[in-house]
Length: 447
Image (cartoon, rainbow, N blue to C red; front, side):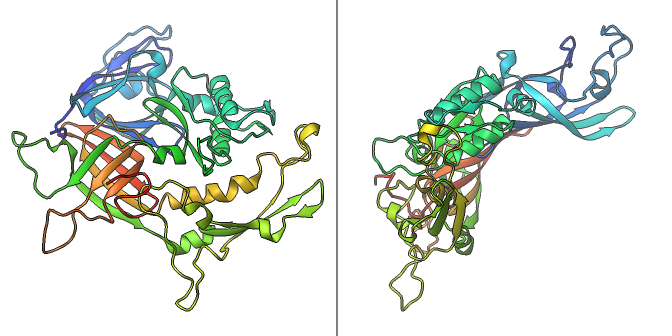
């Protein structure tokens, strides 16, 4: 069973001048590694305890000299230090983590917290980020990107030119073009902003706007939610109250614990205009406002064509006497000045990334994705990344047959965020899963 403890093969901290280092494997109490589809960077946290005799202090020339001291003051730890981290797993589903192959893979100390210093003992928490997270804070996007370029082209350029990363870059193609000026904003800020304006390039014309920009241990991803939803599931997990011995079966794909954190928030979705909204845009060149018939957006126009993790979305009626659903009456009004005539004279009469094609769609896609939220803990599986799909089977609450699965709660879920946890007792993966609709078999499933 993968809940067994993993091996700390390498946990080494380098000083800021990279002339000195200290091995903290024996002092590492626990390691937590985090990914999130709404976070542009991976993070990690290492709890360290030490008896004090770990490293010699440096003299004025930077050479090691004197009696052994604690790590915090002997290295010293002041932020920005590089950390080589390698944890070896214990099974095929838990190969471990490796950020030690080359300096580009190293994690960096963003801050040191919960510092406890005594005469013969010290304890602190190392908070780590990727190198690109630090580069993001020292970079500003000032370049002008032409209207003739698609958004995915601009995204690749920004990642390479400003983040200067050698990591893998996975970018989905977009069908819409967009011209803009960086305005000295940070790269992560611009990339997340562009994600909300992007419409995927799909073989069918039924693409829905809405991208996410995030980092995993595999690299950087600028992905369409439409395409993430149509992935094949990485694994299937089953919740059972009986944990059999390892000689009988493999327990690696058992759900150890789960809780439903959110199960539809109707009022919030109505306030956000998820199901229907009225858009009113002002064109500064023609001095015209949006016509009423063009301004209405309805989710029902996309229900039959869009992909879902479960069954089709079915909206309740406004009242028992009405034939209208909540998707027929706009619950939010969106106003905006059209971005026209600001980049090139030749395209001054055309909308720059027409908001009619992405704004309400993206708003709908982001909010519908959180129809269900489930927190779940499983035996460690470091093959999983944020953005992956997994299939979950939850038992049906019934007195008749305890082996039957709940057809509404079970099905495909997307991993919004995950934490791979390692300590001296075991290794676990905790996740927050999201889903846009109910039902086990929908437009992305076959029974």
